[in-house]
Picture 1 (tube, rainbow, N blue to C red):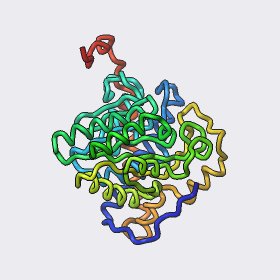
Picture 2 (picture 1 turned 45 degrees about the horizontal axis):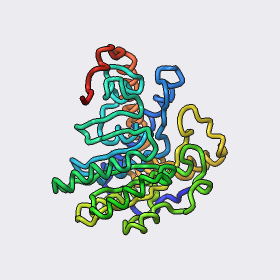
Picture 3 (picture 1 turned 90 degrees about the vertical axis):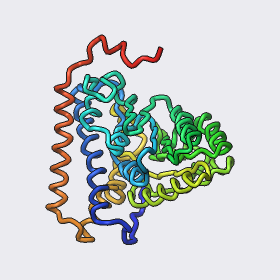
Picture 4 (picture 1 turned 60 degrees about the horizontal axis):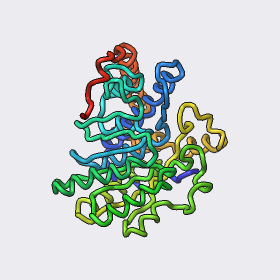
Length: 329
């Protein structure tokens, strides 16, 4: 997949561009470090990296307001960082330590933050979609003007509960943005081999839900589409679907060798459509930053990530007593 970069002049300030660059770079460097820790045996179980998809969540967070909610699947570290969750707490949770955001009991797929309105991280494919509609139902009931971003992938788009949820969300006119993070390969099967339609968002038409395709490798395009979607929801017009065409550079998880696609394909996307390089070019060609400025940002981000890794390594293992906390009776 090669997505054309936008050629129009960005309608954002230099500071906004730098913020998006910094946030995407934080996700990239964090995930690279997580991959290293996994290789060292410090992260066990499953580990699904977000490398390549950074523009999706950074762009949509730029369109969100305080109090808006988000819920997603297991490829969730980028979402946590983009909504402001502490990198040290995220990394400590990945390593199963006491300092983790779920006190070392949740791992990669089960992190939550009530403060940041982040409701997981869910390991069952598609299960977060009805939960996201439930969050939006609560907001509609309270009439608080909030919107829920419910993320799922192209693979989950073939799950039955997704369409049951579309139906209910349309009937009740829920303020929910359904975000299909279409990275083309689900767990390891190309979309053309698993999905009957080229464009998945069209499936919402059966329920009267509007939607559109978005270039998920362009953070500005994602932000613009996100603003349109949330305006639709806040106006009381019900749900909206964004099919965000993106691409993951790594396998489905760290244990996936990704033999279902060629190295040449991945390299072509990196060279032509990398979301971070796109913003980097905008900053340089617009004379909003110099090479030295961007190197300084990268150095700063690497220090943040290294500190997060050290915090995770130094944090103790949870005590056995921790098993009996945070349980609903």
